[in-house]
Length: 552
Image 1 (cartoon, rainbow, N blue to C red):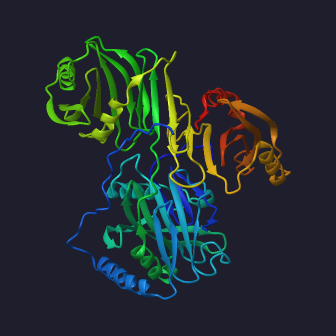
Image 2 (image 1 turned 180 degrees about the vertical axis):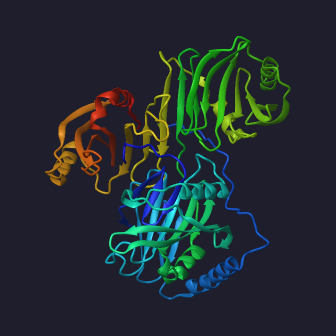
Image 3 (image 1 turned 90 degrees about the vertical axis):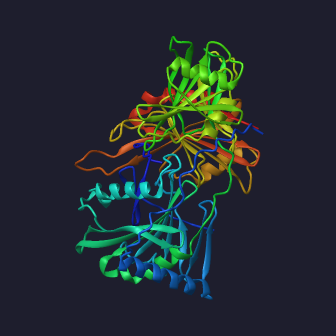
């Protein structure tokens, strides 16, 4: 993963490249062949329900009729091939001779996966010669976007992104269609045209069709892109793919969490892994003390969640909630208790604030930008019920991955992004820069994978790495180190990025690789940063490895 940018948020697809966080990223393809668990049941974003239109355009009716007829044709075809991608919740039906390629090692980021659906002869064709068909899956659960919000974000991004492939300037796209449809699971289409430069043929117009759906916090987009004069060539196949595509729930995983331990209050509280610490330990002088406050980590729908401790323990949760509201000077309205936790609400500045209480602690959930918050009552209740005594000597924020069984200490300003697919388990940015900043920031990734042929020891791992290593990229500082009581094989590799020219020299990046074994699993840690920034951020790496724990 490129450590130069931290790109988190809505992505828009652009043909053979994927646009994320404002950058065009080219892609590679791969052919598709005991810890306590706390449940944080986040409020799900609404499913794919685009607004219905009683005044459907003739083009929409024609497209939906085409889809209906194609589904029957596709399902009755004796040469139909099925392709399943269970890690993405996708099942495809494709014609004989076609193939589906999963870009699981792409640079599109941990929240985006792309399946390329290719016709016969695609690999031998020149770029742009044949129409391009892709299924794009994006994790939008952190932002809790609705389908229309996702469409609007994609439309806004496509309209405001002037840079094209290879850094060439292109005109903004021209939106040709933005309306509700009903094609299989897909409920909206966003279509546009855009002109791209060609080294031998001047500027060539391309046409895009994006069919969109939402399921389980994931956005699904079937994108069909072709030169305008060839757009009809595979339009039927693209529509049939969307009409017959099956979208299912992802395989279940144990939820991860953030454990915040307070030295001042001798407690540990657990919250979802997407949250970030905002403020700690503030005595408000009115009988209540702020233990810690969090942001829910959403740029689109931010909420602030605060944990308070009252000076005197109440006889009941309801009494504690009432006492807190009295101290805050607000008039609450009672709600149904959640998991033995009292729940009341009040309104301030037209914003609805929820208060959850046990006999001693209170959690408030306040929306930052809208009138209602998006944190589910069950999440706030789980947070309160997770509180337990702690004897830490200093306050600590620890990420705990219950599925892959590891943990390490975080910075208050850091951001964790879990991967729902691919070989990497999670990515962590200990420092988040302002949007648009050119500052290089470090990236820490963890990959925990079950080996089909397990290694007996690190000696075998080292021998395999040395046999497969590229002589032009030597391993530096190869040695054994111990983190969390477990031995790791570590080394540093260097790579260059960019093109030497009038805009500057190629930039060197350093990656420290740390590998250990746990039964039949391999565990790889990677720390990557620009070479000229290594010393500046090395203290963050030290904090991570000194606190890293492999459980089991």
